[in-house]
Amino acid sequence: MSKLQSLRRAHIPLLTLIPAAVALADGTATPAAGPETPSAAYASEVPPDEIDNSQDEAIGTGQQSLPIAQAVSEIVDQHVQGRGGYERLKDIASVDYTGTRYVDCEHYPLHAHMARSNQSRTWIKTGDASTVESARSDDDIQVHGAPQGLQIEQERALLQTFDFYGPLIDWGRKRYDVRRLGMEKLPGVLAWKLEIDRPDGYRQILWLNSHYGDIVKEIIFDPQGSPVLEIDRHDFRSVEGSRFAFAIEYKAPNGTLLASDRIQRVEVKRAPS
Amino acid sequence: MTTSAKFQLLCAALLTLGPLAASPMERSSKPYVVLDKTLSQLRADFNANVGKVRMLYIVGPTCGICLRGLSDLQEALYSKKGDDPRLVTFVVHVPTLGARENSVAEATQLISNRYTTNYWEETGIVGRLIQQSMGFSKYTWDYWTIYDTSTIWSDDRMPTPAFWQHQLSGLPVDHKLDATAFAAKVDEMLAHIAPTAAGSGKSTDAIARPQ
Image (cartoon, rainbow over all chains, first blue to last red):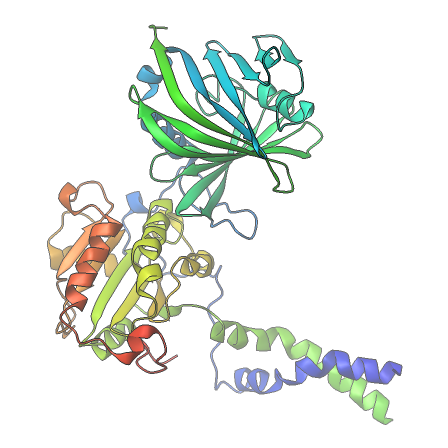
């Protein structure tokens, strides 16, 4: 192809613009109002209290996210209320989960004990005499045995980012940076999408059910910025006034299902903090 | 001047005109209609669809609760009804919570329905008119209505809907948006209109407004 031919080919689409350009130039067409063009009429009938917002502009990221004006605090409030309210939630001293972990065609009895301040211990019985145990105390993480379905680094990321009351409770006090990323359509629900930067370098993206505030999906990123694990939560039920997921799926960053937990029983113990 | 030089000159001229030409092109591709303060286009579209069950929603395009409402109705109503030409929807986006026109296009994606038209109303006067016609104590948006098949919008006053719900504080709680109840009400009203062959979604006529 000669240089002239390629130049012609490159500009053929421009020819289609001629009628529109001419119409605009001779005044037979009016230019469209640009999306950012302010005008005197803008919002003139909307009362100030329906315009003002705690954040300057709506934020949306990614092609799938819809920009929203709701402040982070509003979304977190809904999440807290869905879990029974702040005071009631902070009364919870420990939670015991009993269920089953499914990995491919295998399944294993699972028990997890979680307690404040930030302790988590999970046992997965893999045979008559063998048990996988992973634990997080206030200052230590230990994994004994190969966690069923998950890689060691994924189990570690899970423990590292574990928050007994959840990542959004007292996030300011924990020095987390929480940002809203808009809303995103998940199967059956439009979800709030938040991003959390943690002081330990890990990052989480959360999707919250916009009706109940449940964290229905989460992706954990390691301090290098690589996605490590996706956690999908379903089948939320109320136990002692707080909502808990009774079905949890763990997925690799490429979407491959690694393991599923089905919880049969959740036992909540309360003690005033 | 050689042919090649003339062609290059033409291309340069077209490149200069490009930005000017982009605006009308852009406008024609918008998935919504821009209303003026008289709401004349909305009124014309509303009256052009007498005989059908008409829904009118007033939403803020960056209001998450409104977006959730649209999404819920997509699940409860539109995904089940398909493109039923007896059912026509007008979604009016208003500049609440600081919303601007540039957020409207994304919000229009939440309802997938051929007989739904989205509008951007820059002054927000539609909320004031609804407040007046309904006698509400506050500016009205995040508001979801169904109109009778026979209702005509005959003057400056907004017509009264047969059924309405909302997601505002300060309005009756028994009218809070419930997508399932809303869809049931639509079903009830649709039962009074003879089904058409187009109900299967195969028809090409009876669009909500001339596109």
